[in-house]
Length: 272
View (cartoon, rainbow, N blue to C red):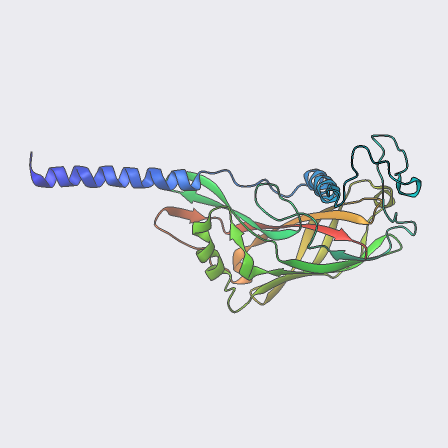
């Protein structure tokens, strides 16, 4: 057998192995799209975990606490709500950056980002980029959402595979345009149910700014408010990357990247 044939066979084998490694790297399932029910359940878990603080000065087994220190008896399934919203949902709500902890596994806390379909030489995957650096506020008057402004730190964006992150930041020019934002431009009627803790879904129109370019976008938004002054809002909108001068990244393994994508967010909000 000639050396050329042996070398040629080796190259083919290495190429197949290389493609296999790439597929192992990128085949991981993307995190699920934002979902209101899942977000509300996660918020409940985060708040419950935050309340599980160990006693700093535990009482000895044979030491009876003073009468004034004894906790009031309550049913085991009773939910204690601090500072109920007696005045209703009207007022300013601030995006909270302390409740929960953003990561891809639990979708906890506040975050914003995108998802886009990619076609690799080994199959189709969904690329997801998200940032936990979110700030902003919402204002409700007479049960209507009348103002909202959310800013996202694009320099902290991460992907469901870290190998994409440099290309993502380059495509979004994060060094020149470190933030993206959304500003509500039309009031939104939330309906009576939101004040009673019901999940509501509405359409919200506003200005989305990415890479310094602003376009009118309509988000599908879901929201639910707890009685203790904490709530969660999720939203998503379809966009065309070219509308924001975003060129989709390319690589040898990437056959194509969709011209369209989804911008999504999850906001934990609280009344100060």
